[in-house]
Amino acid sequence: MFNKEIYQDRRNQLKTRVARGIILLMGNSDSPVNFKDNCYPFRQDSTFLYYGGISHPDLALVLDCDTGHEILFGNDFTIDQIVWMGPQPSVAARAAQTGVTDVQPLADLKPILDAALNQGRPVHFLPPYRDQHRVRLLELMGAPLRSMENMASIVLIRAVIAQRIYKSDIEVTQIEQAVNTSVGMHATAMTMALPGMTEVRVAADVERVAKAFNHTLAFPIIATVNGQILHNHCHDNTLESGQLFLLDAGAENAMGYAGDLSSTFPVAPTFTEKQRQVYETVLAAQDRAVSMLAPGASFKEIHLAASLEIARGMRDLGLMRGNMEDAVTLGAHAIFFPCGLGHMMGLDVHDMENLGEGFVGYDGLPKNEQFGLKSLRLARPLEPGFVLTVEPGVYFIPELMDLWKRENRFREFIDYERLETYRNFGGIRNEENYLITDTGHRTLGKPKPRTIKEVESLRAVAFA
Image (cartoon, rainbow, N blue to C red; front, side, top):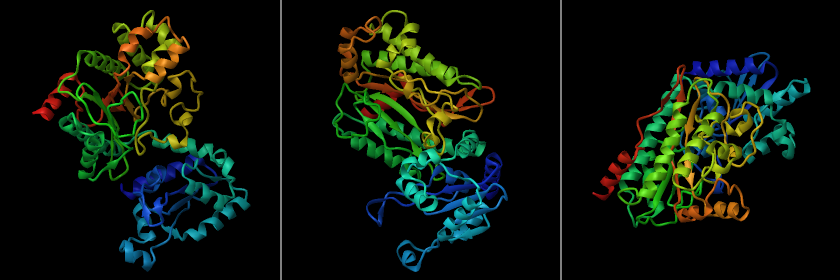
């Protein structure tokens, strides 16, 4: 945890922003895998972590915006739980660490909320993303399950985003710790993956690096020779020379802060000429995007600039033709780049997206529903303190190629006959993490191998 004064200041700012009523922040509970006592590793709700700092199940925070009073609700362990789990700090001891002096059992939460509602005071809560939260809100507030998300407080959502979106220096230090471990995860894959190994073997060694530094995974590892599948969590394949291997993996540190990196490297010692050409296109798109990162710059425009670099690279390979500015405006390039350029990152690997992508990435403005652009998670102007990813890619998706060809889409821009020679190419993505500063940006963490020379030098280690 940080010093308690940090959490007290955050909560005071939140109460001031919301201004009126009661704020209810619910912590997470354990989630059983297949029976009550066999649970997934516990992960606290990120907003609860931000304002409370306590990583322990079955807690709730109530903040009274009118009086300033704060209550932590939770139950101490019984002797039966202590027998199995060992002695644990009391709820009061945990509360003292975060600067809360009033501690009450969970059974007292509902009467507090009932009293506020009976007085006509608003009770602000965030959109539930776990069924446990939905059931609890049903019990506490009588909130109908089907309309619960619509009952979430827009005032509270915006207030939380207005604080969490700007990363303080101490948060950036935590993020960089996670990014540094993530770099080690990627370097390990590049130095150990060989033909004949299974994807799951590589994924296991990558996860081992995270655990060795007392980190967990920020998200399930993508480790695949089918890089054209954007979120491929299947690890059933065996690596073969001539293939590309795409790794998307990040660590989460003990404080809950995430790193998120992607790398693509040849299963062989070196890239083929065709692989090299596409890889250089992806790097050019990333370099163009990163050069534009600065306060006031629209991330949507940065995405479009990276898309134009990709379109030009595909034109140079003979896969696209015509005016590339027009092709990007109409969305023809999205056959190669159907996703967004990046997203916010912090306590969540996709930071605060449980609060609504439209609020976090678009500041409430409408999203463009054009194919490709509709998957862009971040489009707002950048500001100092934002932490985000930049992750351009080029993907050859046979099913998408067949659909667009069958429907005669963008034939003025796409050479489908030549594109057929890339059907089994796979996909390439490169991703790094950045902080927007007062004057521009900086890359977070130690350097990740990204150039062809750097990647091939590590592949030489694997084959030595």
